[in-house]
Image 1 (tube, rainbow, N blue to C red):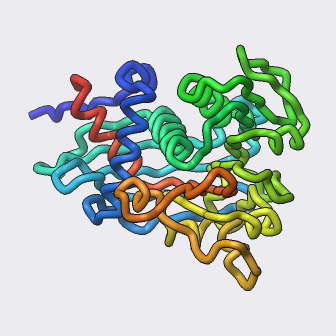
Image 2 (spheres, helix red, strand yellow):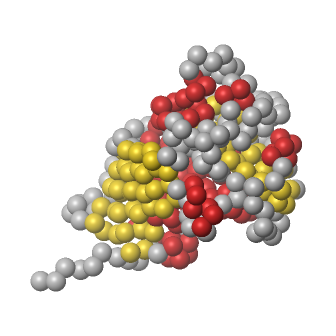
Image 3 (cartoon, rainbow, N blue to C red):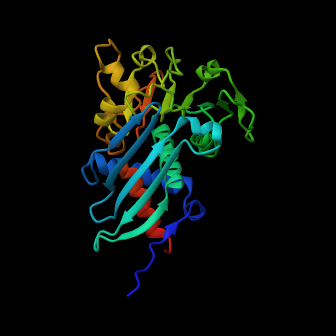
Length: 305
């Protein structure tokens, strides 16, 4: 008896199924479920290899949902090769049979869940937005800029990068990092091992960092982060142990905030988010398996594979 080939869901198929409104809500619910112990994931494994990293994890976004296994690599130098810095594969395991149900294009899954988790956090934590900066205009940065433009409809959006050859419609490109400091909302998408934000942000600013996903990744300097009023993350424990900027600031540094908080607690109404217009707030994302699992569950429910 011949075995049926496991379907592969392409980036084009995933893009056709997803919209910002749907996946922002999908990711918001995933974090809420995780905070309320309704989603589960195993420990993330990560290996550093110079500036490169390899990682894997397993997760389930709901009690009866499918389990996903994701593995991938982060290679910052791929930005100069026109290859994705983050490359991944996601397998989806049937909750009843234990069989692999689908293989998903990992880059599309990573893009949608990362971008929409950032947008969900920004919608929750930011003041009304007029100016947005995106630092790092690679694949993820560009995706963040496009999503932020559509969701927030700012008066101006600035893309900041060392290489500004490839212009994007409606996005002002510059190499000047100082341009970020005049913005209400900042997304940092760099994978940098050296800080790109080195001094305290202006009153009322919200900053979303997606590149400080390992102890050796440091998008925000300790001196800047220590001046924040509140710090949130996809999971407080995870960012306190793995997000370089948070890890280093927690080590014997005098700071305005006492501890990091999980964004799922805000979505669940258990933790207070922004309390006033003056607060400077950071959100750090290291990436959780429950995000991929939630998106996989959405794809299974809405696609015909």
